[in-house]
Length: 85
Image (tube, rainbow, N blue to C red; front, top):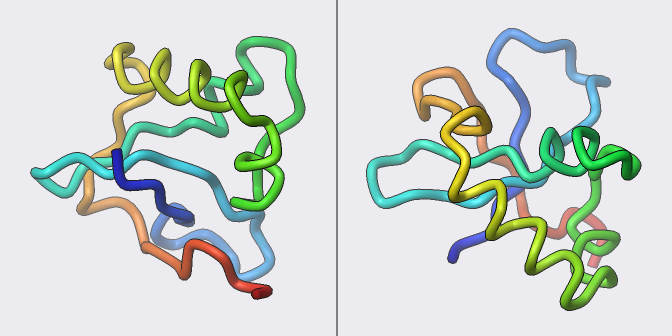
């Protein structure tokens, strides 16, 4: 699974980034949306996601399996996965 940060195309530059899983066809599963749907805070940082450990991995797998979280690659802008090294 290749993890990415992204923003929806056309969103203002200050809009929060979202954590996602990139698919081979360029689409992305929105892990941040899955987090909110499970009653957790929205994920806007890869560091926060990685610190979740196994719980984050399970969340990502759930997002990838659920087509409701699938976003077309044409509608997203990929960002650096860790923007504050």
